[in-house]
Length: 417
Image 1 (tube, rainbow, N blue to C red):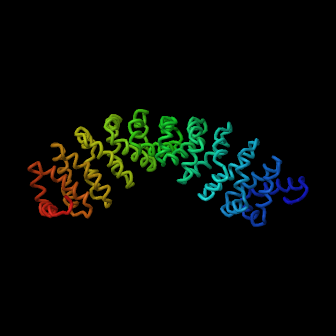
Image 2 (image 1 turned 60 degrees about the vertical axis):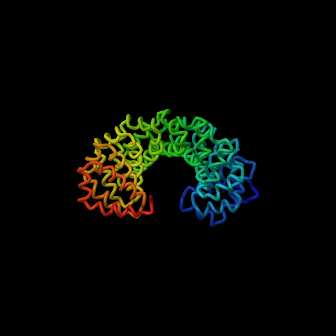
Image 3 (image 1 turned 45 degrees about the horizontal axis):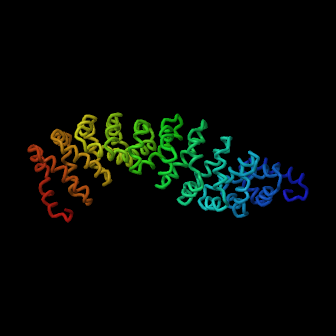
């Protein structure tokens, strides 16, 4: 009856099918009975009533993967893109909702772009209706998860409304705006434009959001921005270091990963080193050396490595109980973590007080064992740390007692200078 020549009959049949489509068990049955082509045909009518019934029903059906395929095969994407410009808010909402469901597949993101959907989706971000804003945002977030889509969204003017929506009172809107910016900021040119458009301070502000999903997406975006050296000091100047350190206190490996990766990037800059220490970062980072997550171990240790180029910070690391944790990380099976721990200990052992502490805490056996490593960077830093320690006569004697001498002599023949 959706194909009836009588529009009143069609409309009532459409309402009935819409109601049936609410039941998940009917989603695939409607497709199997040939329902998708006539439902899409309703969208071509110059009738908001028909278009409402069609989009609501197709929204329900489009959660199922087989239905997604059929909607696309039947030419649904250009139709739905055209309805994004409907003056009817409900039609806008459900057309966008269908595209949201379809856009979980990368090929469909390309089709939406080719159908001219980006400009319409970007326009919907300026809708006064937060439900429509959210539908547009999630679709754009899916599109921006694909490398080609990232540049297209920015090229079509997507950044200003995305950044504006970070101010939204709706936390779902904030989350998806921040998540889309996180995707876009993977591209260095986009990251630069996000900063130019004023996105950085707003994203830093969202690190303090009471909503953890918002915090996490803002953290990912800030992490991506922190890759660019020009942004290292800007993030600190915008007040970013205290909320980044606060992420490390959460009982969430995801938050801790984002925080440590970003702080690792920032900690190469001397002013940021000072701020991290002033804000109580060293005890927090030392505690994360014992994390069961290898990435958190690696980046926490990497930050301490950067901080330890200053002698005062070496003392602070020792006072925070960092030596035992660093010595334990030398026994990690991961050579990247071994190297991070070794360089930190090498820096600590460059200071007279630190030399005795490293040996006293049991550092010699794992240091000597790492002279056997197949990784030449690990060998270098193990030998370098032993070189620092051996300046002290008591330490030199212990290195010999622990069997370090023949291994060090062997490394004199290393092909690595």
